[in-house]
Amino acid sequence: MRLTLKRFKDGPNRTKPEGRVWLEGNALRDGVTTTPSGLQYEVLESGSGPAGRVALDTKCEYAGTLLDGTEFDSSYKRGKPLTFAPMQVIKGWTEAMRMMREGDKWRMYLPAELGYGGRGSGRFIKPGDVLVFEMQIIRVLG
Image 1 (tube, rainbow, N blue to C red):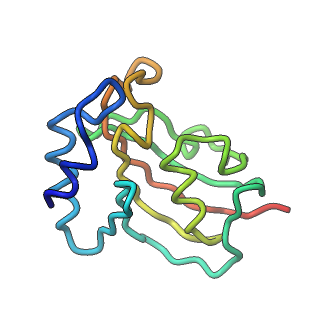
Image 2 (spheres, one colour):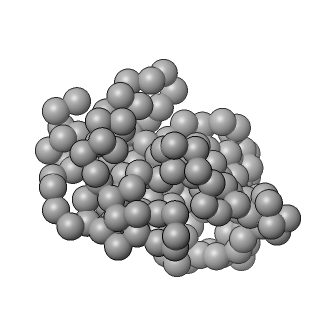
């Protein structure tokens, strides 16, 4: 797992040290896949629809939490799926959506470099936070 430490060097847009340690441990769990960028995911449900494409709008349901379980956003709670193109969201979502198919449901673990980096977002996401998303692709539009 030394590659993980090299990938997440210290800097203003980087994952906090405790987040890096958590991601290293998470990468060892059965069913968790880590991409070269550092995105980690586990497939909860496999869909059979078309694959997502960068330029196509996609309808999805999602919930986002911090490592401590604090939920900062949820389309489930709003009762309305979100529709957007993969290039309109944070890097980790863009990468995941390129690999997902319609109907897939994944749990994703995003280092800060693939989330909000050193700027954070809103009142819950602090600079350097690791983010956890459960996301399901409802439909690939277009």
